[in-house]
Amino acid sequence: MIAFTYSGQGSQKPAMGAAWSSHPSWELVQEASDATGRDLAQLLLDADADELRDTQNAQIATFLISMVILDAVERVGVDAAGHAGHSLGEYTALTASGALDFGDAVSLVCERGAAMKVAASEQVGTMAAVLGLDDEAVEEACDSVTDDVWVANYNAPGQVVLAGSPAGVAAAGDAARALGARKVAPLEVSGAFHTPFMAPARERLSDAITAADLRRPEGLVVANVDSTGHENPETWRALMTAQLCSPVRWRQTLLTFAEAGFSTFVELGPGNVLTGLVKRTLPDATRLAVNTPEHLDRLLDTLAAPPADTADRVDSHEGEHLFATDRMVVSPGAGIFTPLSTLEVGSEIGAGTLLGHIGEAEVRSSFSGELMAWLAVDTERVTSSQPIAWLRPE
Image 1 (cartoon, rainbow, N blue to C red):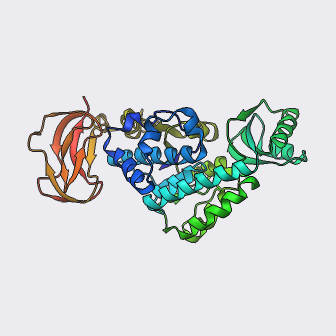
Image 2: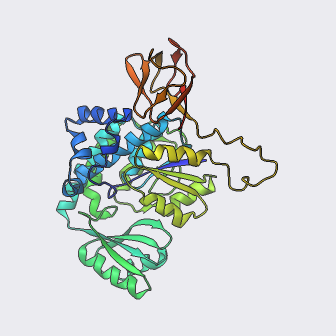
């Protein structure tokens, strides 16, 4: 089974939206800009590292590019049975699973970023990654000092993040080294996230979470707070409120998915940190990140490959997977399909080529190749994500 994971704050980088700006999924950026009254395309295309480091910019920019990538992945017909995001990425996971409406999620992420920025300015805090020490030893290091410091992220075996006051983090880092830590690396962050220092942000954000419309998610969505899957919307409301002051249990989250039978993890967003954490936690799992449109082909190729344990079996049907890398263009919505009259079977299609319309909405190909067949006929009423054209890559 496939789980989608969603990047958190810290994965953002300048021009991370440039590769997607001509992709049909970019329309989400305009939708979010209209909802917020902000030029969010500017953040994704032109903002420098300092501007993106600002918490209220980093969070909406990372959320939005992750949603653009999710939309692009769904347009090529790939879906997941599970979702989880690291910190901010949990909001993306809830939106992807249908628990949150996109518009509500945009508003919540903006409020979350603003609330955390204010909280960080009221109480100076910092964070540091501890490498080469198990969870219990890092907890022991925190307990051994008198200044404020806590575990903020359980990321992977041998990778734990501390957060708290500068003095507390420094003292706990020294204690961790004394216990055998291989390295303690300060992180360039503006506050002590996922600790009691974020209590003012939690109080402010709780009002917005209470007002949001939360629905039962589709598939397994695992929470940061307790590394458990939940379905009850009111439970999720409480978890979202608690998340800001609670550690992210990412290693435990991945183990929850593994125990449920998930073996493929696809990170959707601007980074590949979560893909590396899968490698450390579940070394036998299939893992990859989708950061650019070029990665869509790699995703489809990976999912189409025969399982390793059957690749050499004598009774395998030779050649049955040879056409598994063919591409299906799916409908972006429901409505009447009208193909472009100038396109015929055998035509060469480029990425971004207009294929036709669903009502007034444009249907563009997400990849290039030869048009092998139309899978929907002229004036046929189609549903969202229904295959409408079959392409074979060159």
